[in-house]
Length: 86
Image (cartoon, rainbow, N blue to C red):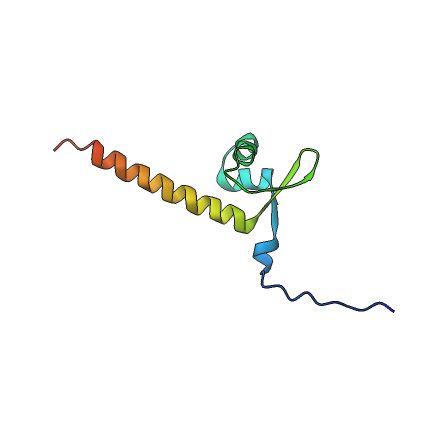
């Protein structure tokens, strides 16, 4: 007899939704190869599902964007403080 098992994980659907490298590239308006470089340099977490096929969790993409946005803001702050003509 087969039973229906209900998975009661704390993860929402957003946490377990996966994106392809092409989808991430289109969202961020970068080339797919750029996304692949982020993955190979361990800047963007991804799961390998085939010989050359990667999937990125929405949660991991959000974290990547948050970290890089903070980094970009810090660099802009440093540049604006260092380049003042006063």
